[in-house]
Image 1 (cartoon, rainbow, N blue to C red):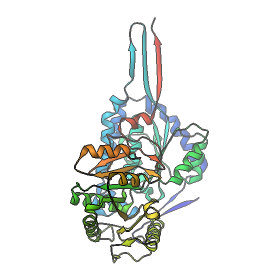
Image 2 (image 1 turned 90 degrees about the vertical axis):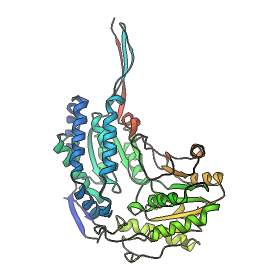
Image 3 (image 1 turned 45 degrees about the vertical axis):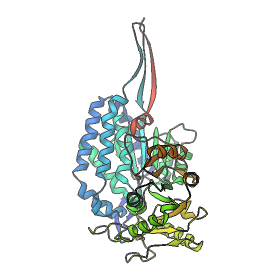
Image 4 (image 1 turned 60 degrees about the vertical axis):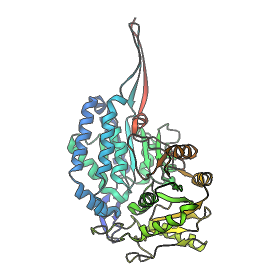
Length: 458
C-alpha cells in the first residue's frame, strides 16, 4: 500500500503518514458518492443549509487545535489563530444567499403556460484543495456545492492532509452523510483517472499552472467543467496622493503574511517617483521588524515556508536578481540558515521585468519595488504579467482608482486594501490565473447547471 509522509516545515520531521487510496477503492467510493447524491439533492434546501451551518459551528469550536495543526503542517504561526474567521465569513454568506439565488427564475406563470429556469446540481463535485489556506480555499467550494445539492469528493494537498480529515469529521458530525462529503487521499494518477473516466461531474482546482493544465488535460473530451484558480503575481500601485503609512503597512502585510504563500499576495509594487524613496525606507523597516522563527512560539510573526522546495525557489529568484543588479535591503535573520524552510523577508529594489522575481510567481517572502512616473507606466507594468488575479491601487481618489482598474487585466481591483477575499464578490481571474467563478451569486451559478421547464397547461 502506497503512503504519503507529511513533512513538517518546522523541523523536517514526519508529522503524519497516510495511506493512499487504491484506484479500485477510489472508483468504488466515487460510485457510492454518486449514488448518494440524489437523496441529498432531494432534501429540502433549508435542511442542507442547516447541516452546513452546523458543520461550521463544529469547526468554530476547534480553533486552538486548528492553529496548532496548521503550524505543524504548513508553518503558519499560532499567534494568528488559524483560519476560522474567513472560513466562517465565506460559509455563512453563501448559506445566507442560497435560497434567493437558487430559486427558479419564473418567466411566465399564466393559465396557459408555466415557463421557468431552475438551477440543478451537477452531481459529484471534486474539490482539489491547496495547502496555503487549506480551510478557507476548500470551503469556498464545499459549502455552496453541498447547499446546492451536489455531493463532494475532497482531495486535499499532501502538505495539509489533516485538514481534509478535520473538514470531513465536522460535516459528518453535523449530519451530512459520509458518502455525500467524502475526504480521499489520492495520488495524481487516480485523480486523473476519476476525471478522465467521468466518475465526477465538476472539478474545482486551486494550485499551480501545471496542476491546472493537468486537470484540463484529464477532462479533455469529457465535457466535465473544470474551474481553476492558479495563483498570481499580484501588483500594487502607490500614487503620490496615497496615505503612505497605510499603503506600506497593508501592502507589506499582503506581501509577507503566511510567509508570502498566498495566491493573491502582493509580489511586486510600483510607486510614483515622488514618494518612492520614502515608501522603500518604510517597507524595509517593516520587513526588518518581523520575527522569523518557530511558528509554535507566540512572539513569532513569520514562520517557515511550507516545504524546502518552495524556499529553494524563492532563494533562487532572489540570487538571480542580485546577480543581475538588484539590491537586497534586509539582513539575513538568525533563523535563516540559507538552506532550510526559514526564509528572511526580503525587499528588493533596482529590479526589472527581465528578472524572474518580477515575472514568475515567487509564492514566498520577497517583494520587488519599482519607481514609476505615473498611471500610464504603472498600468503597463501591472499588465506585463502572464497572471491576472488581483491588483491593488493606492490613492485618495476613488474615481481614479476605478478608471485605472478598468485598464487592468485582473480578476479583482482593490483600492487601499489587498490580499482579501470578499464573499459577496466573484473570486475569479484571467490569463494564467485560470478561469472560474468562486463565491458570490456567481459561485452558485458555477456549481449548478440551468434546466428549463416549458409547461403547457391547456
